[in-house]
Image 1 (spheres, rainbow, N blue to C red):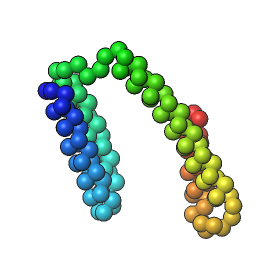
Image 2 (cartoon, rainbow, N blue to C red):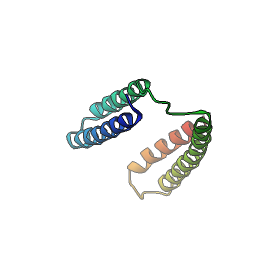
Image 3 (cartoon, rainbow, N blue to C red):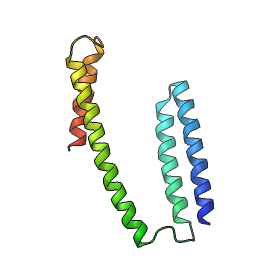
Image 4 (cartoon, one colour):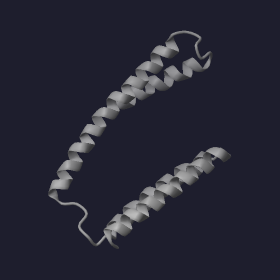
Length: 116
């Protein structure tokens, strides 16, 4: 398979994932969405193994490595800020009513996951 065909296939997989996501939300079927994501990732991984052309070299691998590290750093800060905001909002009182305790629990869990 050529590299351009691979990228086209990834686009088709992404469009199918979005369609399945909207259908799943509309029909309240979260397991279908979860299964579709797993199948989509597996299909992308298998199709990447079938590419004949060289997709990455040493330089692009180093760039990807640095970009992924920066992405993890930014996401860690973003998730921590979101979790901290959730804790502050939920402990602020009856802003969200009984739902505020669930926000606090989720925020504490998110902070635990980020800094695990």
